[in-house]
Image (cartoon, rainbow, N blue to C red; front, side, top):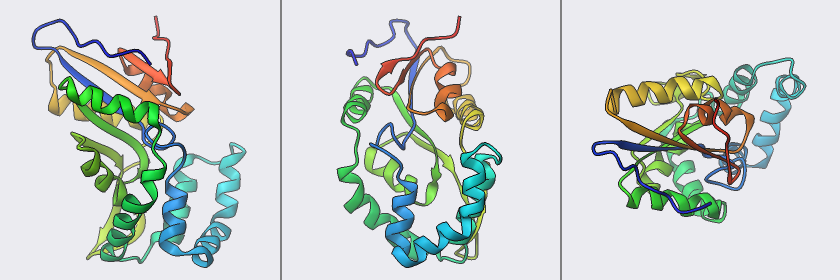
Amino acid sequence: MPELETAQATGTIEVAAFDFDGTLTRGDTFLPYLQQGLGWPRFLLALVQSAPWLGAYAVGLMSNHRAKARLLKVSLGGRSLQETAQWSADFVARYLPGQWQKQTMDRLPEHQRLGHRCVMVSASPGIYLHQVGQLLKLDAVICTELEVDEGTLTGRMLTANCHGEEKVRRLKAWLAENVGQRPMVLHAYGDTQGDVPMLNLADCAWYRGQPWPRKP
């Protein structure tokens, strides 16, 4: 990717929105997170209990939201926040350092050096993504939030799954609150079809390291 050029207009705010899995990292992180937190026996049991839902999603018979809801319920329902916070700390410290996508991770500090506001927009859950956001010194983490009842995860989503058009809805809400009507240039980075709506929203976008053509 070529070097960034900052906006010339005085007062223009530049925002860089990054997908996480497969964009800032080399692949999915949610399943490895569950495997490391649950251990192999409980992780495999969760996959078996979710298999019909995951299979239906894989062949286009079920939404991403419903399949993910099932996996969350059987894997995280009843887990305490204290327990998952420790999972998250270990995961971020031990697993993620070997998973960064160098090309995009080099671009993030370049945006930060230019004073751009940098946000992560991901379908993965906030139980570990907020720790990632702190590590990367991001301005915001927009992701799938999970429901908590008296310090325990219910296994349900508090927000809609932050995927596809939901990424655009959530990002627009953040921009409205933090940028408002001021002039803005939006950069976006993604790697799957679930990122395409966000890429189409941007003034300058990259898909798997290649320029994304803007809509006419």
